[in-house]
Structure formats: structure tokens, C-alpha cells
Length: 359
Ligand SMILES: [Zn+2]
Image 1 (cartoon, rainbow, N blue to C red):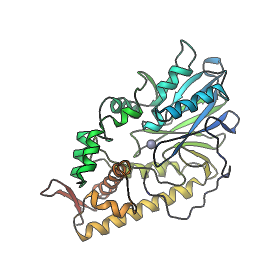
Image 2: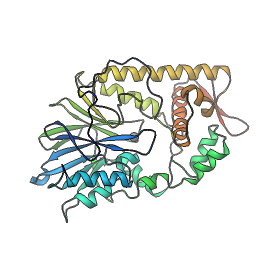
Image 3: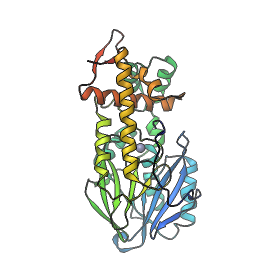
Image 4: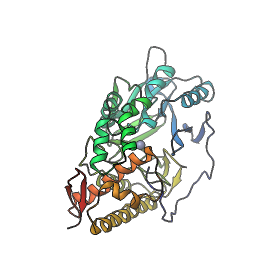
């Protein structure tokens, strides 16, 4: 994830500092439950949502996002199904996007907690379903030879880091060993009846191929996934699969579309605490990226710069390898944004590194 946002924020947290314990639920509205689990990364937790459902006429649960495929999260789900979720099967496994902390256990949950003989269906956008299928079978973006070559072409020259990126070709698959073989497609604008509520799908771009947030107008609640987070700015990365992507432009446009939601919307993010104040948050994110773009323009005006040269400008702290790969993707996203808009030119230097320059 990218740097925490230093701007003053007028967000409010209606639940204060409350959060559910691992293995327990916190009910936010009748039939809408919050679950929180630990992640083995610098970003150390994820929020997941469990909704009362009457799919096909019987009481059941719809689960939104699933956690990475690790033992501690499996134990947390087992504790939940032995406790607050007991007595009802999983009927729908809904996934906001293809990242491992969201889709990692979809198959695992479907296998264990569906009604015998009636496996829950995975619900997901086509873009993210197909990307998850592909990533769990071959290396894309996260590691392997192609990712190492891509990072090297953007100026990452540390041989140790490159060797470790080459070695982790199965990085995604280690956290998402299996993606369900079939699914039901979520599309922008689609309305899903889950229990007593209607939820409208809001597609968002730039963080994942086709991220789906869910908005319930009657309750004024937005399940924002990773598209809108209260404290950290969403990672917006360009990877080796689509190296010329304008991920930042897509992301900023998606945020602008979310501004159509009412100001008192309760936002349920995948990381951090539920909050109110989405317009302030969206404005702060626009300003945050605009400031980073200005800094990069200034850097490139001094001398042609690579994405690796941009890391100390964008990230004023020491990065581990996991953070470095995210940060490189983020640096390319910002440079591509300026390049797509004609504010920067780019050329390969004699070492085969993309360098971006002004004018
Ligand atoms: Zn994500």
C-alpha cells in the first residue's frame, strides 16, 4: 500500500475504536456483520462482511471477501462457524476483487461451509475472476522472470531484490491455491438482493482489473473494498501484464464516480475502521496524488528519471521487498499518468531502463 495520507481529514468514526475480536462478529445493522482477521503483511488485518441471506428460500450466509489462504485465517473461520455463524450454510461467496487477501479462501470456504451437495457460488466481476484464475496458474505482476525484467526495465537494479522477485514465481498461487472453477458474474449497476437489502454493484478501476464495491441506498452503507480506505491510500499499480496502463487515471475517475453517493454514507472499508466522510476522503486522495505528481514532474525536470529514481520521492521510508514491488508499480502508475497526458516523455536509455523527462 502507498504512503499514509498526511492531509487533515474530516472523517468521523461512528463506532469509535470498536472492532470485532478475531473469531467473532460485530453486528452493524440487522443482518450485516463485521468480521476482522489478521494478515501476515505490514498491512496487518482485513475486514470481511457476513450478511444474513435467504438465498433459494432458506436462511444462509453471504460472505463478502475471504482472507489469504493461511492457517490462522482458516482457524478464525472455523471458530466463526462453530460460534456466531453456526446453523446456517454459506450460500454465496462474493469477492470484491482478485487480490489474495480477498479471494484467497473462496474455494476453501465454499468446500467447508456450503450445504452438502449444494456448493455456494462465487460471485465476482469477470475482469477479476479471470485475472485470479490466470494469476493462480502462472506468474503475473507479483513475481517470476517477467516481473523481474519489468522492474529492471524501470530501474530496479538491486541484484538481491531481483533474484528474490525471480524466485517467487508462485507468490500469488501460494496465497490463492485454487479459484473456484465457475462463478456468477457481477457487473456495474447490477442490483443484488441479499437478505432484506438491495445492494448495487459499483465497478472501480486502477486497483484491480474490475473491482466491485456494493452500495445499499436504503441504509446508506457502502462496502468499499479497497477502493476507498480511511487512512492509507489505495495501492494503484502498473504491472508487467499491462505495462502502459493508466491505472492512476482510472482510479481517480472511479473515485470521482463515487462522489455521487450521499455525504452521510457509512463506508465499510477492507482495511481500517468504518467511517463517514467519503467526500472529504475522496478530495484528500485527489490532492494526495496531485501532490505526488507535482513532485515527480519536479524530479523529471532536473534529469530524466526512472521509476526506481522516483521511489525516495514517493515513499519517504525504508521499504522491504514486498513493499518495494508495490512501490515500483505505484511509481510507474504515476509516471504513466503524466506520460499519457503529454506532461512527460519517456525513452529507453542505453541500459534498457525507461527514463521519463519533461518537455
Ligand atoms: Zn486489493
